[in-house]
Image (cartoon, rainbow, N blue to C red):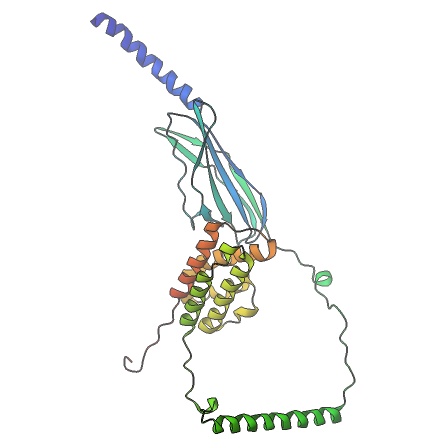
Length: 314
């Protein structure tokens, strides 16, 4: 029996590396990208795939939303791994990464690393070209029609002004007379209405949007219009910028110079990026993007609440 084991054991040791090599050769990894050319703020998908034997345990690369592949490419969302059966011995596993970039240029995404116990597998590298929108000022920006100046009659304007003023005075007099006769208070002499701080107004409106469930009803464009309008109104009062008249890029540029706003820039980029895609590219956002957008909107307001120092604490 001992002689038999002495013969078999070395044979098993010599065969084991070949078995491991055969198993490794059955593993294939691949990375693809939906579009290698995008505009600034536009999004695309990176798709990772691995074909492996049924008994193998291959670990996918580990990335989280808000991380970056490179200095200028941001991860917005990571899907769950999806497993499908190829045949009795092999499985196909897929995972997607939603990415974007706010800086123009050509970027190389390095190979992704998959791990199997003591061996690594590298995918192919990917390229992404981010372009700005080219505008020809001479051709693309012009007046629709030449300015027309109608003839002006000052005499008619004066007559109309006096008529309107007289009607307004008569209307005010009638209004005061009716209110006084019914013993109702006159609003002009009531205590001034309390003006809520900008963050309270914004949080109330965001709560109403969340409870309205617009995107669940298929009203994605209205959902993002209301979200961005609330944030623009908030930035106007909180940071004293003309946010209602700015583009998404101009708002981000204006807030980058404010120390109180730096912590929320990444979340704001996500909201504005998806909003611009829905409004201009007419892309259908995912459920995850819609939920992240409302969550990030609340965070943007809560993280930038202005601290007011009262007279008692000075």
